[in-house]
Length: 166
Image 1 (cartoon, rainbow, N blue to C red):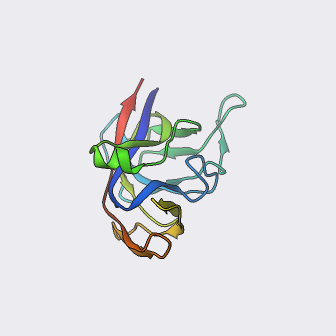
Image 2: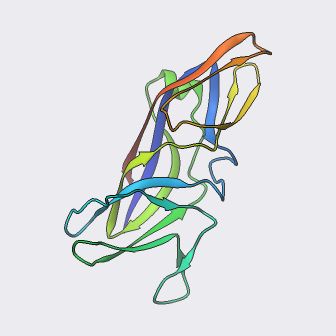
């Protein structure tokens, strides 16, 4: 069992608190990433999607997980289980310091998550308190104008990494 924390960062201009639309534990936010097999090292060709609301029963016992997938190359089964309560929004302070904010914790058995894909369904707020919802980061950036603060706002250079967490 290895836990991986999805860490995100971006350059935030006049913005703070970047996170999924329903908060860091948004039950409907789709996390898209590729999976690398822990046995043979094969990388999935397509992204896998996991959502907190979607669970499947484990083959043994009464527990559930968010994904059970068989490696197409070696046939090994692996699971990915999301663990709530570990994420924080990306603030302007974290962004300016060049650090990453933890978004979601994944308990991975037999797989390693790689290559997180930014999509839509994000929210962020301006330093003046204006809320921007359903932000699409699939192009890697977002720009708008804050009427209240009378200034442009922008998200650029979005990056993500998975870190092994003890």
